[in-house]
Length: 388
Image (cartoon, rainbow, N blue to C red):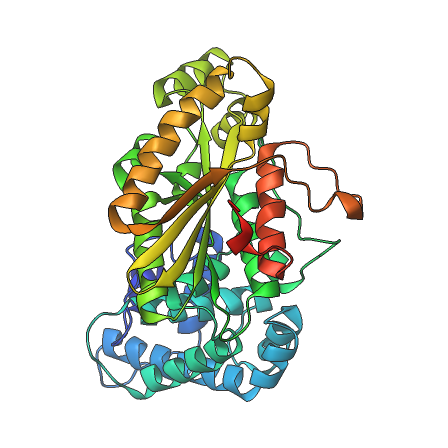
């Protein structure tokens, strides 16, 4: 049998699935283990080697998804936790551990969702059935949101949430991944089927994709975690038009400086730390919460909860970061208000500490924004009262 390295990623190119050219698995070692396992029992017959591998891989993946479907109740009971994948590993003929099997299943689910053409096979029907079953557990979320919730960097925390009395939040020096994790856990805990609330599940850091790409190197690729104002607007439009949502919430971050300044500072620092850590610790973020409330088919109220307003009232001259933040907010709001017009607008935000009675100290406005979103999601805050 030819060595599996000659096939590599091509093993996965099955009808009805689209895999990105690279990055399907988080490491080369895992990829090699998976490719090797898929080829392990391939028997060469009269067909060409490539055809034989394709048929064998198709049958093997089909068996894997049938096993997953057989244990769907366990999946639901443990929220897709390790107990489910351990069980699948015990039943599956593939020589892979439970972590590798989970990654393999996720890869095929993602590839099926990305496939744009119409193609139905025995395997695609089985994978579609699995997607339908796991989506029914989270039917309050659309495909975009499910993709966020399945982020490998946060999925383990989502499976085993710790709420004391709210999920671990983010602060002005933490990674944007921490803020994304908080938003996802808040949504899973509080948004139920037929809920009128939608939360944009990643922080918004830029107006458009061009701005995001300009910060890629400076942030050590953390800029990719952030959404854009354009993406948020598109998401909100879909929520109002197609999903019967009445309230859409997003969290916007902004910070001081330009990409070349961060890169220069990183070089001067010696480059001993990872670039993403350097940026996160040296360039603190500010935060505001945007709340879009549908009044009727023609009116959307736009409300900004801004913790820095109270600080501005206390200081005769706002610090530079706040002044720069005003420019970012203006650009951001221009994008939003180009689309959502006709309603009222409100921009306010005394220091709001809804967790203080529970003994949760809030040290900066990113933490305050997290607490605001949590309180809004739990129903303890009536957004219609903002501005009254």
